Amino acid sequence: MDTTCVIAGGGPAGAMLALLLARAGVQVTLLEKHADFLRDFRGDTIHPSTLQVLDELGLLGEFQKLPYHEFPYLALNTGDRVVTVADFRSLPGRFQKIAMVPQWEFLNMIISAAKAYPAFNLIMEAEVTGVLRDGAVIRGLRYRHDGRTHEIRAGLTVAADGRHSDVRRVLGLKPVDLGAPMDVVWFRLERDPGTPEDTFLRPGRGEGMVAINRDTYWQLAYLIPKGSYGALKARGVESFRAAIRKLIPFVRPDRLTFDDVSVLTVAVNRLRRWHLTGLLVIGDAAHAMSPIGGVGINLAVQDAVAAANILAGPLARAQQRRRPVLDPVPASLLAKVRRRRIFPTVATQQLQIMVQNRVIQPVLAGAQLPQDLGAAADRLPLGVKRLVGRVIGLGFLPEHVRSHQVDKRSVTTGQVT
Image (tube, rainbow, N blue to C red):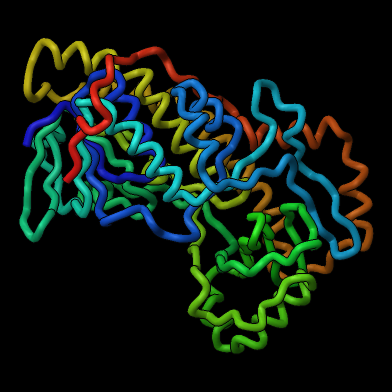
């Protein structure tokens, strides 16, 4: 198969980039290794910066049909009080809340929008097994589908296949590890009527909990020292349940078992170089983010928007001149994407590392919390809380969709395998 662009990975970065390129008339094939997007405890936070992108794409109405829950601030729960620490209610623009929506719902919406364009092609259950290369030049991908190995040649190959990227592994590209002192045990518990409305961080001693209000249930992130999940299991499920009750007394973990949890091995890293001739790496494949602030989806979407803004025009013009396969996209053009996105990536990771080192690590090391922690947080100036809200909600460099768009055909035109 030949195409203009092939994208490995149907997560937020890959799906959004595929939509934007197809929207501009660029022939794009998206390879997704799974049969569907239905996996729990992936990033579910849709920040104002991403809501703005959806609005610019005319997808806000479709998004509002999804099962989402909004919250206008993030809080710190010290056990005796709940204090706002990040306030989104004064953000510029139309959107002053964070929305929580199952990632599979978000991805299905993006893919459905992409299918409206004839340039879009989706192949599910397509696992990347190799890279087509000519020396240092990348010319496409090799993948397994329906028990057979296939090749797809392309002028641009995009690795958007997550923090465990197959493309990155095959090419021997290794990110720089910036360190993380924690892992996260994800699970959900039923939310009883009359319990708190807030989404909050509850620090303990040697542990912590992030509680996300999902309306009918709590999505809970139990913070543990890195590599300590085995020790947590060894202490037994009753000990785990007791720790949950101690941190959040109003939940009922009586039926929770270790079969109900998902463990995230937290990593903060980034590639020094995001491109080769013919290849671009974006999203978690280029930079794994800490779950602090829930910014992973939004950084990935911003990468995709920036890449499309820079590449869609040149790809569409080159496609008109030479079909079906372009010459590999030059490294000089792909380098512009990294130059655009490296500052917000580094700034966000530095902020996450600061929170990890100054807040999370001491808590997980068993440090005694100050008795006046809640009062101190309450005394933070409103301007500081709004600034934190702006950094989380909009990021350091929010991207906006340019007007590249071709006429749509029937929504059934996009190909799916």
